[in-house]
Structures are given as structure tokens and as C-alpha cells.
Amino acid sequence: AEAVRAVSDFLYGRIESPILLLYGGVGLGKTHLAMAIAWERLLEVKSVAYWQVSELLDALRYGYKIEDRLAPGEFNEQSYSAIMKYAKLCYTLILDDIGAYKTTEFAQDRLDSIIDFRYIHHREIVITSNTLELPERTLDRCKDGRVVRLRGKSYRGSTRLQRLAGGKLHFGY
Image (cartoon, rainbow, N blue to C red; front, side, top):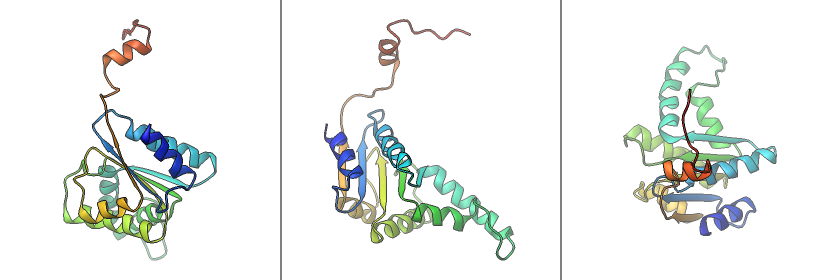
């Protein structure tokens, strides 16, 4: 109930700093709620970027290589600067599974740059995590928005799948 209220508050601008951190164990619906926000913004014809954090960091590393090969004035949407620009400027940014990657100086610097830019410019950001053991600066920014802990048992698993399938779950080929 608290998470759904927070999503509603986020969507309708009732959170002063537009930052929403959803955290808790696996399978509790953090990504599902973040994607609900994304779909709502897309229906409003707003730009949205979704990144699983480890994939964003990989894309940025690869983007450096692309950028080195570009001629002056040449553009490639996979370049480092293009990815960073979109992550900073899109209407809503979703960073999924922050903290689930190996922390390096590069990782922390890039994420801090994105989160700080969005914080300063009052741009929407939704962050999901399994833990609150995040870099101090990131957590501090999130506390200006809304931090919500999801609790319960994982929705994933065969029991739930069987219930949804009316007990007739089989994987035939």
C-alpha cells in the first residue's frame, strides 16, 4: 500500500524532489512499479530511459570505445556522450538494481554524475535496489525524494505460477 501511494505521489508531482527509491528483497515488485511509472510517462508522450545499472555501466564503457572512433561532428547513439546526455536529460530515468554491481571508481563516478545532474535540475528518477547500502551521496539525494521499503515474500516461484494457471501448469513442447 505504501509503495503504490508513493508511485501515485510520484506520478502526480506530490513528491517535492522527483526521486523515488524502491528497495527491498527480490521478487517484491520494485521493477514492476518502476515500469508502471515508465508506461504512464510514455502514455503522456514523455521520454523515458530504463537501465539495469550493470548494463548502463557496460554501455558507458563500450561507449568510450565508440567515441574514440568518431570523426569530429559525427554522432553515434551508442557513444559515451550520447548515453550520458540521454540519461541526464530524458524526462524520467529508471535505474534498476542499483547496488547489484561491482563498485568501482568508474561506476560510482558515472552514477553520481547522472544522479547529481538530475537532482540539481529537478528531473525525475526512479531507483530500485535490494538494499539501502548505497553510496552516501546517492542515498542522501534519495532522501530528499521518497524512500520506500517493500516487504513480503517473493512473487516469483512455482506456487504463484501454478495459482495463476489454475493449477494446470505444464511446460510441453
